[in-house]
Length: 153
Ligand SMILES: Cc1cc2nc3c(=O)[nH]c(=O)nc-3n(C[C@H](O)[C@H](O)[C@H](O)COP(=O)(O)O)c2cc1C
Image (cartoon, rainbow, N blue to C red; front, side, top):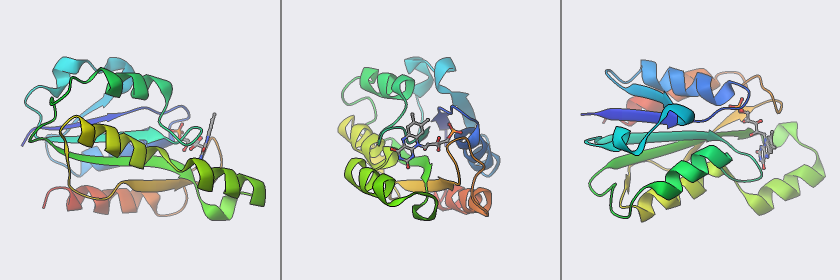
């Protein structure tokens, strides 16, 4: 199994989740999006993509990378997606409505990957930050480890 984890992160929280996932998948390669090329996708059997939610979607660099993936490139590739996002507890009423309207990055990334042929093996997952710049909510790193194990079944 060749596993690639690609992620973006503005304040480091998504990176921490990506690292926790990488630690729990033997031989997984972890790449920040600015260091990722299309060739890195060659022969990958499990692709994991993670992004902060910004305005209800992935970051611009991650989005641009996904858009460049040729049609059908992910055929027979297992894919899994996560984002980081605000928790319901940490936002006021107005922001809650905005978030409900725009939703999160992970489901949108999943849709793009499936569109490119990817086989989504688990539902898109969200990990909670308590503030825009973090930190992550309690237990999110542990939850990321459990999630990583699930991907290998
Ligand atoms: C410009 C901007 C827009 C954001 N929009 C959303 C949003 O729509 N929904 C949400 O849940 N969180 C939103 N957030 C909070 C981010 O999800 C949070 O900053 C991110 O999880 C931190 O991850 P990072 O440290 O990897 O950058 C936004 C943050 C920024 C900076």
